[in-house]
Length: 115
Image 1 (cartoon, one colour):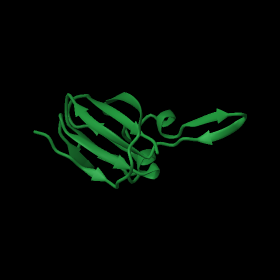
Image 2 (tube, rainbow, N blue to C red):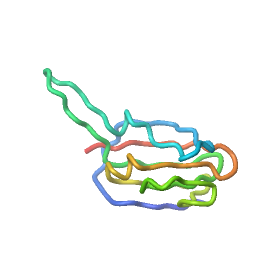
Image 3 (cartoon, rainbow, N blue to C red):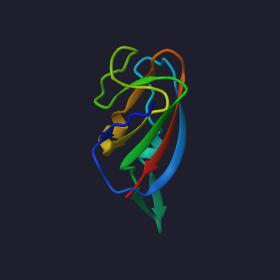
């Protein structure tokens, strides 16, 4: 079964890929900060290249997630079953994303997009 959820919209330019293990860490597991809040130095100037969105595919087991600083639990948050794909857009939403497993550890396959 494949389900989808889109939070916001935006242009897509794939920038990087990541695999994140979602376990039962209290407060949930976030996205990789160095891939969201990225800076590059060009000719001595620091240029921000923040991510603007992600596509996430859930592998192995179901997760619950939040994007508003609420700590997810196995009973709190948006439920996404294994094999589902969803998108999240907006820098604040990406920074506040937290996920927790429902029963067993899950893997998130994440593609980060820039402008």
